[in-house]
Image 1 (cartoon, rainbow, N blue to C red):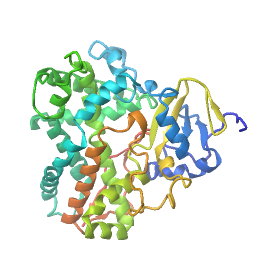
Image 2: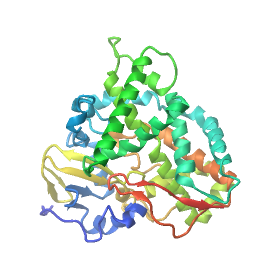
Image 3: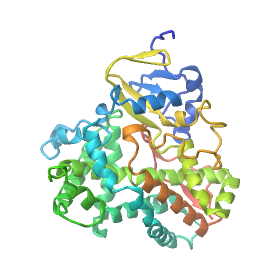
Length: 411
């Protein structure tokens, strides 16, 4: 295969555009066909857009490492939060350290532990909807989607209601810290975000210490009480506290974003909504097709450990590589009519929304259950729910993981 010079992004590729926030797959179609691997200068990263290449990058961790995903802790916070702790971020470590962390985290999110939560999630969804069902509309992103996922994770953590403001601050700043690896924050936001992040870490540190010998079934106790083969704690208090901060966002906002995206898709595909209303087993398919077509995290970042060739393009060692999950999920070489929203696909879970390989999301069982249940209850209670047309786009402008801030609906 001919080796190509550093190809540049197509002129219509801009992950910070409104079009990308609305539909990240749409900005990758031309690139995937004409320049499937290219360098995007504004972010200083290489983009990979085809499914086969995405699977390679996500699976070959020895070549495509996650180590570069660790944010740089500002000097003024290092006495409270050592850079060595931040370096153990679950998205920024490779095996064997990643294997240690994943084994501990996964204990709290295994399917047999999550499936019995469905009636609890359903009851919680009804309680939330009761607050606004008597109105003619609401802002659904915060008042329902994020409210449901936040209450569920707080219950799984066994946190008291009075700690909710702290939990919400941790949730909201975690993604900004993660994204700062590629999208640096400016002052005064930078200091505010890092202060809240470190305060959250200190909060969870104390809880882990308190629950080290607990036999309770909450996630914090489950992670804190695990032992290695020598009878010592499987993970240090520092590492567990860090992972709890990370899960505070990953276990809430990403599922809430998915629910909002599903509401938008169903609004423009009434036949799919009618089918799901008539057959509640289809709500799981609504979830899968939503995250295939519009993953909450459009990109996944890695760094090359050696020079590598993809699609005839040489990428130097030490280069940041972003996999476009949205592009890979809509690659016509892998899926028919990829841009269509079709809840009747033969293999509904054949997508990379939860990535692949060793970094596959351990919280996927909870996301699937909560997303499908939350949508089902919402449309059972409010069957005439519609998206307010032509409303302004409201996102936190981050390329790596754009966060929808609001979505107005009526019924």
